[in-house]
Length: 427
Image (cartoon, rainbow, N blue to C red; front, side, top):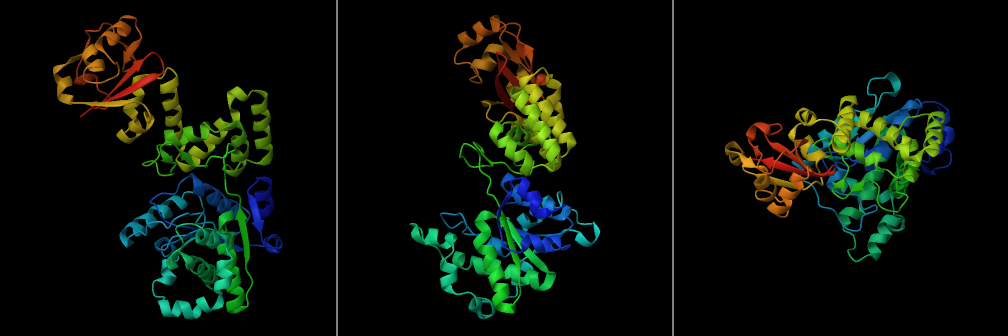
């Protein structure tokens, strides 16, 4: 497998330093990508770089995943309009451990010579004094060179300016490359296209400091066809951690991809071969309403990020909301999964003690909660047979509900018609 050609046909390749492809075709090489632990989970925006490392390893090369314990303390200005908040050491350490666990899901750390390896740049920066750094690193890169970088120029031209801390970031990242080149024989650094300036600072440092040669490769920054930001929803980022983004929400994110985006995403975010993708595209084009591309994409990536059981649960969740799956299914879900399933659905909280005494349907839906604007409206729709509690049609407006009908001892699901859901939480 030719690594560069693989990225090329998948539409992932952006920039590549001359000589890189020839070097990689000679045999196994070591390369790395950095991940800054700004949160205790990676999100779908990181998946392009994770996939890049996966392809790199599958092509027979040795991938290094650098978690930035040191750079996370500084903050990368690339693509940022303002300086981000710096993290405390305790928070940073927690984030590092969480990110490491996630990366271990995707890369093979026990496959012989090209086993993946995790490194933390804090290990080589923790005892590096400021004076040593400006003497041994700073003198090799001129201010003119640093000022010419787009990430620096844009910030200096903006209203907020740039702190010295952020200005030095490219030196810190450049030294990472130098250190890994010197000690781990890392000949290539990869990253998103916004990282090109930082990466070539590393190749320049290797050349000026030791007369060595290193290479750079960047991937396309993923954008949606409509121009909006990839990986963001109304509720925020789509995380890989199921506690932050439930597997159901994660699955729905990919399932709701537009046709145009699905055709590019299935190349970038799955490991399907070219003929499989082309067959799926033909199937999709023949019957777009069946959403073959979106279903294949959502299934593959949900299973790889979570697991098959969570994928099956996501399917059942969809069927529950849009099909005929019974209420019993909710008993299989924990609290976070229930809340995730009903994200965006109006929810109300009532006292569990009131259910112990019993509440009639009208009072429950128009008194204790605002499922209906008035009791009269509630009675009218109940009489018409259009209201259900826990997927059971309400017989009369005077039907009484008690605590024994609570799902997981905590929830009631109200429905007006087939698709208007309301979650009632008893606490």
